[in-house]
Image (cartoon, rainbow, N blue to C red; front, side, top):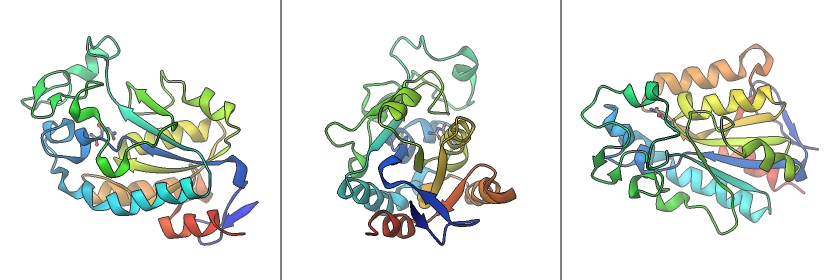
Length: 223
Ligand code: TIU
């Protein structure tokens, strides 16, 4: 077993062969102006700041020969996978499926649904399109993890308290041991990010651990 000794709230142990990286929704729709994040009324400019650290995290997992999996929140063009309740939400001028500056909002295959260049999946890395906030709902993610023998997950991506936290809770309930990578995740709301980090690791890691990119990579690269 390898250990991130400085993880919070106490050391995080993982088997090198069963440890993978799950990057959540590093898409233009959330990170660039004119997408879903903007349509919901958010200032999306905060999110781009994590791109260098997130890219370093991904590069480290690739260098170590570990699996990297990517999710994207994106709906079918006919919206058959989007519940009416989700479609109704927002209150802004643009809703899911409407035409925006990066194509139709949150629709798979549109420019806005694509990954930002710095976090593009490499050839062969699984990309999981998901209709919900959690990556396990209505997706093949659990099967993909089981097939690969993955039991431990480092999780990064956006946004911390929405798709990242929902996914980490889903993973925790399914028996995965998860560490949320603090500087490879971001929220439109700094207070929500901090609250998420705090609540996940409270009560003796009730949902899981947190650690920085440097701490995760140091443990991953340890002999
Ligand atoms: N709105 C918001 O903060 N997030 C989302 O809608 N989806 C994800 O977090 N990916």
